[in-house]
Image (cartoon, rainbow, N blue to C red):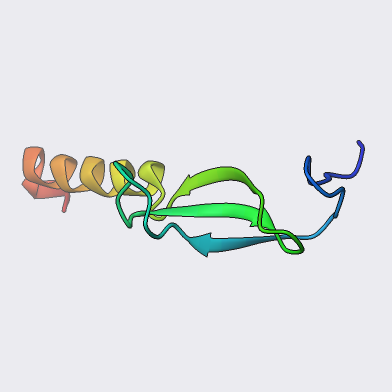
Length: 69
């Protein structure tokens, strides 16, 4: 597998930063950006939706089957 590089400057180091001042995008997102020039290469949800759904599923199972909880 090749090394990930910034499409703007070619740098190979990246960082995760809070998304600030972005119209129509709430603060619940983070940017993956180049550590050298700041070019954004990706956007992540701050809270993993899979973990949240698993928590909800466990709570629903406990409500549906109180004798097992």
